[in-house]
Length: 172
Length: 279
Image (cartoon, rainbow over all chains, first blue to last red; front, side, top):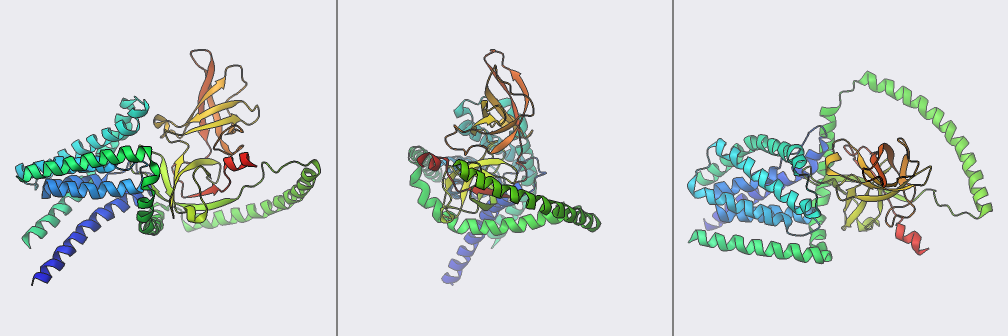
């Protein structure tokens, strides 16, 4: 009986990890191929804040670290840039876990906008402002705003799926 | 209690990642083994998914009918016929050229470099960067600072090499600076990427002498004096050249020959500029 529970727990863990990994692959390998997309939605960000909201601070931070490590190992020259922002996002949204029950789509939409904005500003500061590029207005209108819109649309589609997955897990 | 616990948790994570950012900034080689281990299983996967994605995109994006395609084939066959004719003539000339070069004892400076064909497997997510990954690494003999070409001209430079992948920074990336010159007047200038120009597919052209004769439409190639780029690789064409307000230099734009929106295969030149300095 205990062995069964152990297996199940691991299977669920595996399912969670495959969701994250699938989103990562989709975002880095499939979306850039579709050249007529004006911007690419940040799927991984949606997953981080949704997990924070649905499962609490600790899980939010862990998912943030996993996702951040994926990106750090794969892209950036300085190790830790993405771990920092994603774990903070996971934690900040985890705080809301106790006050809100995550079944409202409007809450997730507001969070999507806020988180995406914070993430993009962080990237701007870390990579552009630091080198003295101060054309923030251009970045806001041409890069950050489209990114927020695309992420918002993706949130509406994905959030329900992740929420249902959470409900199924809890009911079992 | 639980609140306190997660506060400590996030604090530890923040401190550790800040420490790691600082460390890897000053000692980039530390993270290389971890990256290699990771890319060992991600890169083959990404490669396959990328091919699959490419097939999907083609199915949806392909609006050409069979008739059009057939017509195109006929045209291309005609073209091949006329081109092979030209090649034959050129080959004869090339032999003659080789012979004369030997006679004059000139080194083969502009002739073919050895190249490796690579497939683009991933792009830095978001619109902030113009950096991509290719599916060959030091296993295949790629080194940092090797020049990357598209089918038409200069495309970027290798900035990071792993076991089975490498990272390429496009010349339109905000951090990119290429020392270049105009092909006919050999006037030196600088080609810079700019985030505000990503969408217009243009590059900034700066540092042109005010008395120079650079005009719109000049071919811009990599310069002889660049420390990283091999000489005479075509970058693009100059346009909108104006004299700066300070009356000391000219600047303008360069339209690159490479279409950075659709890069799927690139060629990496296996010769480094620093090698040619050694010999």
